[in-house]
Amino acid sequence: MTVCIATDVYYPLIGGIAGYIKYLSDLLTAAGHTVIILTIDEKAKTTTPDTISKEKNFVKVVLSSTYAKHRDYYSQFFRPGSYGAPGWIAIGRAVNEWLKNNHQKYKIDIIEISDYGGSGIFMINDDLPPVIIIGHSSALQLARYNYIDDNAHFSVVKNLEALSYAHSDAIVAHSPLNVADLKRITGKNVLFARAPWLPPVEIDPGSISAVKDGAQIVVSGLQMTKGAAIMAEAARIVIKENKNWKVYWIGGDTHTAPGVKPVSSYLARKYTDIWNKHFIWIDKKVHSILLKEVRVAGMAIIPSIWETFNYFALEAVFYQRPLLMTENTGAAYLFIKDKNVITIPSGSAELLADSLLHQCNNKWRGSITTESKEMLLDYFSPENIIEERIKLYNDIIKNRQPHFQIATEALEFLNQYTTLPRKLYYSAKRITKRIVKGK
Image (cartoon, rainbow, N blue to C red; front, side, top):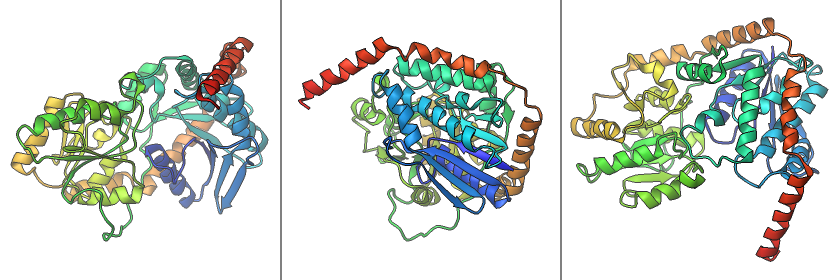
């Protein structure tokens, strides 16, 4: 089978989605299937050529000039920044063009793309292979927890995501939590498949660590929905009883705080008493470095208000670290019966602090057991993942229904944004900004 994965992020970029795609592509190719990664160069110019690299049954296509062409065109009609509607439209347009010209040549059977940004709607066409929307977390979902700038960018992204859900050949999620959430949002049947994952390989113990051995750590983007403010509030409560307590949060900053400001700035201002003293933020690290920190952690903490899955949970169990997580962490379903994984309700700094203090005062109940680790390795065995995945793909292909021109017609809403008055307005604003800056 030939699987095409369209994505804006891919290894060696850092993050859960990039890791997911790397795991999935490695598992599929190792099982003899062909994987085509369709990605983009965000910084490309229209003169930057597209590139294709091949290795056995793996193909990576970087759309540069084709992406830049559409991005630059749509950027004329929007204020710079924010949720970047021109970028998501450009991904959809560029991938659509490449697929129309190449899907038969490469004998593509099925297409996967993330729900965030809504680019999938551009690929839904009866002349192209079936499209699966993967539930990694959409702007529609995250807007319930993160602070967003509700402007034209976000309006377009919300529409694109809703259309992608509505017209896709299937929606697939990797936790019961997200399956239920996407069913509520879309009104459609949402399929479940276990997340692709490969256990860590042996790592060099000699490199310098960013945190102290036995430290309490969070590995996640510094994001409101991931519980950044909840963690800070809990830290403030904990240090009233344990003045030496610290937690290290490792992950890149995001603009999801009130006013759509960086979370690091928000926390530094609101929690001056604990920021970088008891709540110590370390920027994102490459995955190999993160694994070294997980291996020596005294406790792995996942304070999320809501998230679709979490590979950090799997890595903590693999290294048999004590694990404290909220019930709205997608991966929590794996550990419901595990007495060595503490699961608490999400959104409560008081409950989180109580659990952390219990750990401090009682030295926890012990590390994750060997049985828990073995359960994880069996559940996420390559055989289980691939068997389930290929059956899923075949069922989607078999049950595909015609779309006619509905998806194409649905995109006509973009015409209201590509008007001459909008172009002139934003052109004038850009010129004024350059004059003010003296450029």
